[in-house]
Image (cartoon, rainbow, N blue to C red):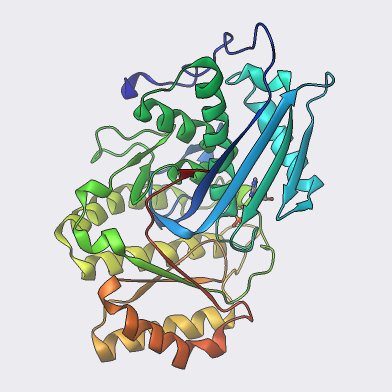
Length: 365
Ligand code: ADP
């Protein structure tokens, strides 16, 4: 079934309430994710220029509860509360998202929404609240369909559609729908891969990666300088973009091989190169952006030195921002934590760090 899915598959005019319009509450918790092979550059509509691969996180997540009632008027009503405070900005963005997917879920137009959402980490700061937030919304809408229309009863169908819908909200959100290691984007080395939704690939890798740690060092948790949307569009004119898209294709194959073999040296080489390439793309775009801070570089230098001195396989990756994701096997946790507290603390913002790890994926609330 998966190979048959295209941009029309999920448009379904029949998904409307023909009798009574129900009211109810549905909620999902969904995690953020950190890309190992980066998604940077896209085509309409939210189709990636290259495949990407990510670890789904655990503690960095969004809990979203939607209360829905029969629509009170023609205009869609979306009241949004973030961490218990009304958030009209998120309300408007969510309404725009809902309107954009109303050909997939036509029943949306028959409802008013109150949305209560909590993020466990700072949003708009490069830790992918858009991924956890949009995947939580997508899962909740699919659950609404399952509850009232009796569709999507097979988990595989449910999560595939949730991933497809999440992608339309924010590209990388489609990877948050599954736990472990997740691919999004067509790759020669993954037969079931698609540009339209993510697929879980964690069952293919060595067990060291099932409990891999990601301590997110918060160098600066302020709002991003360049929005993801603007960042992606910079790739349309970046002179290095075509080579970058090919490199990502190669990296997917090489990284998966290394992860199957438990080859940490190659894992480190590819993931660190991916992080620096993402930033190099930003530095070589017009206009150009420098998203690392001095403390980002201080930390990276110390990672190189610590690795050399101790042989502990600790490495970094970066999102499109200054915060450093420290990646390492669970077995090294105590030593790495001690090192963070003694040597890296001075480079962190008052928010410190988020002690996260590879997670199992979303859960229904
Ligand atoms: P990041 O993804 O790094 O946090 P972005 O600027 O890419 O930063 O995304 C932030 C956007 O994600 C917000 O403006 C909002 O539209 C959306 N978002 C964040 N948290 C939620 C949430 N809990 N529910 C719905 N949307 C959210």
